[in-house]
Image (cartoon, rainbow, N blue to C red):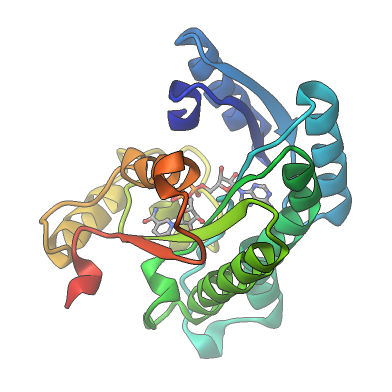
Length: 243
Ligand SMILES: NC(=O)c1ccc[n+]([C@@H]2O[C@H](COP(=O)([O-])OP(=O)(O)OC[C@H]3O[C@@H](n4cnc5c(N)ncnc54)[C@H](O)[C@@H]3O)[C@@H](O)[C@H]2O)c1
């Protein structure tokens, strides 16, 4: 939505078709340009089809935001290999597949910006989140390596990573339920309230962030103002990582 506000024609790609349609409708209602694509970021074929569709519909691509993720709270000894792989498939394989699929079209379009969403959990360990931390740490270093490849190729593509702190979204509830939203739950649940208070208490600024706080970072990294910024990690966390 923030990218559309800045004038971008946005392709909303998600496994959740209903959510993608809703986002697209909100953008269009406020005069923005958006369309949707069904995408499972873990599927190589989906990515190839998605980039082909973007090329057909828009003729060019300048920005890719790799945002999809699962967060599954699970102590190591209770974590099955299937859970480890499922989380990594979305969080790390998805970023690899998306970046590899989109890069040629971004280059052919004259350059642009790739923003990967990691986490403060990619900067430090958090008990109960070993799989999530491993995947998000991977996203950070994958970003830096690809940024250097792009810089060496002089292809005018900058690649950066954002590490959000605690941002109020449904991921909080999913985290406690094997990465899935329990049927019928919404942001008013007691669990959300509980996590909101704990998160505010653990955040130096005293409140948790909103998705727009991260979106503003994406806008900056994709703008000309960030023309000298690549391979960087932008921490947006209310001060958590400061000390
Ligand atoms: N909310 C936080 O506190 C927080 C903190 C740090 C980092 N992050 C990161 O921010 C990003 C956005 O998370 P969020 O908080 O909005 O979570 P969310 O659960 O609300 O959104 C995640 C989105 O990813 C989509 N998704 C999941 N699996 C997918 C797949 N296989 N293919 C395509 N789409 C898929 C979901 O449908 C959903 O729309 C994630 O990378 C997350 O790790 C969030």
